[in-house]
Image (cartoon, rainbow, N blue to C red; front, side):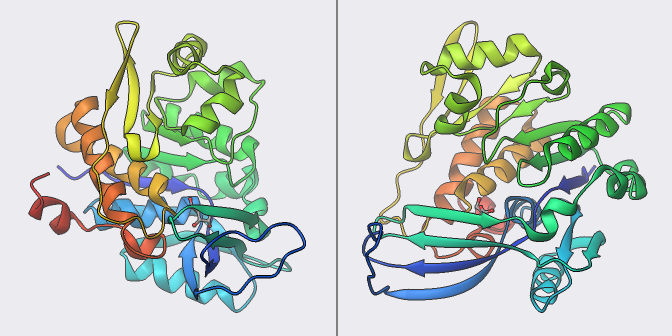
Length: 301
Ligand code: RIB
């Protein structure tokens, strides 16, 4: 049986400039390419998991501007249901200014716009979205109180919860961690959240706070998790050339959830996630670079 996904999160438009290197403060340099792409961690994850064949609903907001249609059209083009996406008045659609250097590394500044208006009242108005889903994915580009509210409704409805704590924020409310089944930070985010340098210690600390499972994304090195007090590293897939790492973490999350649905096994799910994200970094853009289910299967996953 297909399992349905609900993504409670951000919708951005990405303005991406490619350049040999990042400029220094006060410096002007000439880029090598520029594109406007669909982005936002929420929308990216919704598109990535939908491309992997899972029926997906987006719960979020766009602004009342020209960009809203681009965002809605792209989500719909990739079969993401937008019935629970509202248009917020007097605010712009979320945006991200992104620089990508010749190694495919990026620097991102987001402006939340309508994403900041994804509040508790809006979530309550769309509570029926939760009745459709077996999995909830959320991130920290919408207000934290809204993420927490979404997690509570998910728990009431026996929905698996997956949280990408990006951009990282300190969480003081202990109840939050009890509501998270799978936490998928990267190495920097887990350090910021726990204040610890050691990965194993950080994972154990979060599990002691109530998170059921923590998987840390380590870029080219792959990803790791904790088993019997040991750090288990699942290596990443080497690629010939890294073009653009934007959205690789979002693609990882989608691959991980798809893997859990298919295999009910954390190591197999991480392998699939590593493969999906390695695929995405070989093309420009976030959503547009994610693999389809066919592309994954073609490569034996
Ligand atoms: O994770 C990548 C995303 O982060 C970009 O698409 C950008 O919109 C920011 O939200």
